[in-house]
Image (cartoon, rainbow, N blue to C red):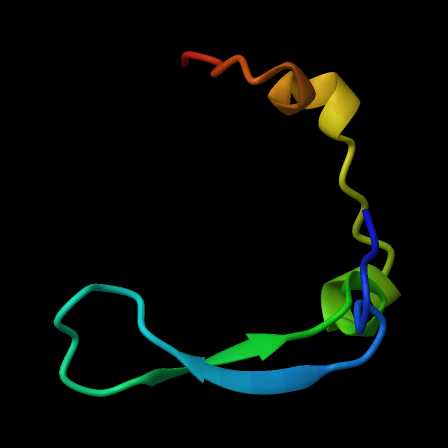
Length: 58
């Protein structure tokens, strides 16, 4: 699998729903450019159980 443009912020137009009257903008930003990650926010998917596809109840 080849992933291109991941580290480059970009904007594109697209449709979220069939029959949508007008395209909407999608904004891609790499995780490293987001303010929360610069402040030390960390995702730990292994500990949340999300990596196994299991949904935790609460």
